Image (cartoon, rainbow, N blue to C red; front, side, top):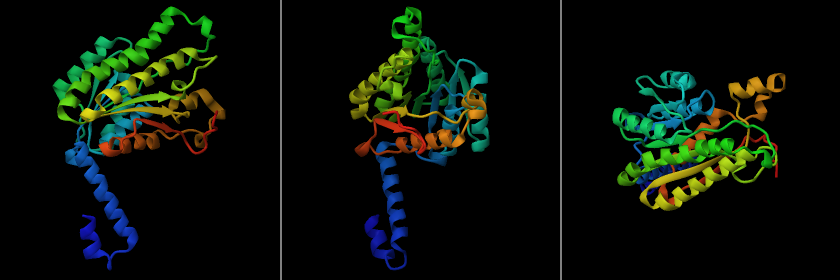
Length: 283
């Protein structure tokens, strides 16, 4: 296509226009190579586990805008209300449905995703977007029950999600699986050790899945969110101290997920980190 553009239009189109056309051609070629069904009528099905009012809402809106139907999975339907409403306003005719699961109980995750596949079709993109509470404690104060709950939420739930979608993605030779994570996946904490332990486990699982199944066309991505997000929860916590320009915009973060999904297998990102330009780096 580049040859055609250069030969037929070089004199009439400026170099910037040619560059944009060539970029679009490369993007479409990458989508074709990956097997994506693309935008609009070529959209697929995106399932979000942890489709809350913050990043979950932004992800649901972004993928709906790009032609995807949305399956929102949460413990309670009220927890996904903002995400479902965002889909309804993002694109006319978008199919958005709620499915119930508790990420600390892997059998409910498997059951919910089986129901998604049965009623909405095969899942093209799965985003595991859950996190536990940031409860401070010293490492020696960690309770066994709390440790088990953290492991169930961060690792067992993620494994159940992967087990539910990766086999079909391997058969099709395409699919994207995102794990929303944090800086805690890279370093321990004297104050929030439970959170770090859970995210360490999640990152190890993501890396293992990427190395095992990337060759089959499954794009597995660990997303390090090194920032606070501008969400209703953060606004409530910060109160008068809230500064929007110090937070990451959920819609901008969702755009990164989307662009990563579009990557060609010849140049995949399996580890990405996201922060706003105003983030104060901690190391």
